[in-house]
Image (cartoon, rainbow, N blue to C red):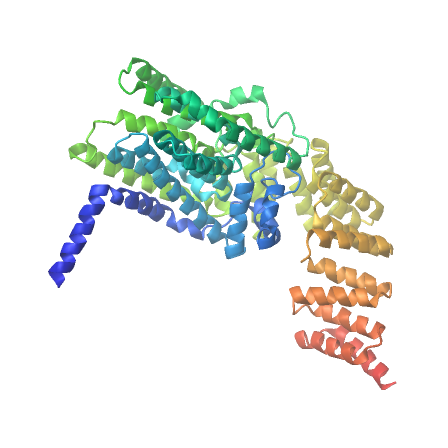
Length: 633
């Protein structure tokens, strides 16, 4: 019996070895083990909180999934830069599964990284590369520290999705070429659609397909192109139209700029240098002459080798152009604040690097990487890269780690100091927060968020006059800065300037009309002024944007009571208690509404419930006495 089982296992193992399935298993398991600890990481504080934490109530609802196509990449209905609905859907699925559990988002990134590697392995096989060599090259890539940013930084999800759908569309493209079956055309279109709606870089895929035709000597390429071209045009047109409808805010010329693109093309040699010399990798990198020079030398060597190469020149050139072409679109984008913190981000190299991997597969063809010194070298390289990656990954463990890593690599990172200051304040370290803000402003006094955050810090200390000085500096630098208008409104309200606060809140809404918090605050100010109809209008707008805004429900109920609209108040209290059953103020207001409707037994029941939640609730105890007295009469 035992020997029979051994024979079965031996046959299975021999089959797996013969079909090279174990390569796929190792290619999945090794990077998964290297990154497994990352599921315990939190938010980096760099975009992920804006996309996920602050929008969690929206993205966790299944009913909102179709709205992913009506939101920009930051989950806003009107954006100014990016339209990536497939990424939105992936984040929404994570939130539906795990709520605000960040581990689910990190685990999803790791899974996507592994999946992209497995698909790349299959693609390389279809392209004719040796399976063993493809495995080695992709294994080295799977644990390379250059890709840590893409795996451990949650918002890099878009590049992971882009890689997966780019590879899948390419696989179906090759399948169609090889078989002529039209079923592959429709599957290709599906994945091409997903790639384009994951990240706009995929708009260049038809160019890549054309180059594959040319360099691989595909026969009947004109017929193939004519068959596929209509679908590409339709998908791209739909994307551009939908993008234009969502991104309705004016895009600044300093965000997408051809002139700046040429400066940013330094990323091409820089990333190449860091691929072969894996040092200086960080969360918010700047261009450094050493890497630019080293990468340029590598580019020249590769170019020279391709020119002189005979056999396999076309394959090398295809992989080389893949890297160059996919590196260009990110260079078109320049964050206007990047000069205060970073020049490029390493996750954008994820898809371009696949082209370098193709070149490496071609260069290693004929070399027996599983024998002698080569085998030892591969093991040492994989182990060494895995150790560096494991160590570097902790830079993404928390907001403090993320920005500390950025500052360590670039002491002139004003963004890093500014963002770290807010995190320190949230940890109860106002002195450390102010030190970081001062460090940020010492680097540059033109960084509006630092002035705005300094204003917020002083407001939390109750120094509203000083806060006004700082927030005014922020608004002089950026007169569309919504958060600064909100902070100035709060400061003015606390100084008794309610009309000025209203003006600033309305100015904030002019640039961002979807801030439920602003409408809520406006409602509070109108309530203080005794303008109750306006207050209800603002609370209602806040609830339209966020139906689960319990404070807005409670305050609207309060105003309804003042206007003797008892049934409206009762309705709001009931909605509130559905969301938060132990909200004692809702029971207190509910009791008042019942009294107004002359339903005293119900009022007594509600007020007793409020007291049962908090027996020291003095206002409720006093009001129960009034209800009892009314009942006796």
